[in-house]
Image 1 (spheres, rainbow over the protein chains, first blue to last red):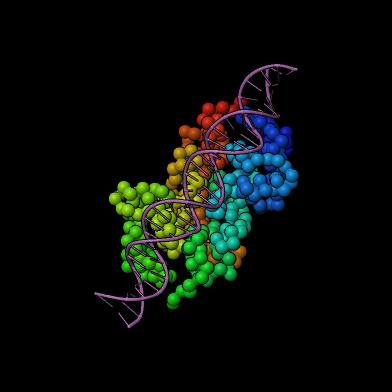
Image 2: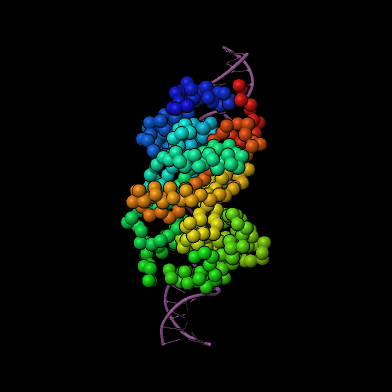
Length: 170
Length: 170
DNA sequence: AACTAGATGATAAGCTTTATCATTAGATGC
DNA sequence: GCATCTAATGATAAAGCTTATCATCTAGTT
């Protein structure tokens, strides 16, 4: 399960009636060669494919992401940017968690056995089987720390207004 | 900060140049009278308002949710159902986390000082100021445990296919 | 090689969220 | 209280991402 070879991916897919296609193989390969800790949105992945000269439609990208996540090959992340991200799903013991800056939208990863254990324990306490657990920590970068704001992503007017950064009227 | 009165909400808003309106007061009130542990999407909130005979537009609902989250009155949740949820933001020491069943989409809450502490520690270790941290645990209800699937939300064809539940070919 | 069911690609549709803008109405000062 | 200034509202359009449709192609199997 560590990292799939084309053959093991094929076996896994076929087992459930799915098929291995060149497109799926290409997409898996991209995730496998992605720098550690990176994750892609559907659109980002599609852009990479196009840039590589591949001819894979957006539909296929979405479908593949679904299937891969369904099979447990990929992990689906909700990092509050308004769309999902995907990354290779590593075996249980080393799942990682995310620090998200609500300002620049950059993410940092970290691992914590402790959190994994808490997650497992909590799930089992309720009688459930754990699939995945993710701790997401929202922060602001030091440079944008003037205001104490929540992590809602402010856009349009709220955003504009916040950019003016009306100072705290002490 | 425990729970806002109309007056304290007004003060908070005005401090930043926002205004207290009947709509905002109504919306805050709904969150305040919501059973402990519930959270609402924009649409759910709007439905409640309409059901109560209030005449508040969806635009206003979204705007209010943004402002409230921005001010720290509400907390924004990403629970992987494809849209955001909001709930009253309680003071730091008792933030809670969520167990989400990927099958029925129901959520359970739990608290954990330990997690809060880990979050704070992690954020500070990186030199950042923590805004919020949420542990989301994905599970499947016992009844739907036949398959070992990831928590991607399968729809359309994937969904249909999974409903047929092709059994593990041992 | 033939057959069946899944996969692809192009496109349309869907759903949630955001932007626009004329009108209404808080907040502040006189 | 009244006037003024600016934010908020509501209706609607538009945007963004994701999902559905369907004819065509192809992987997996016999």
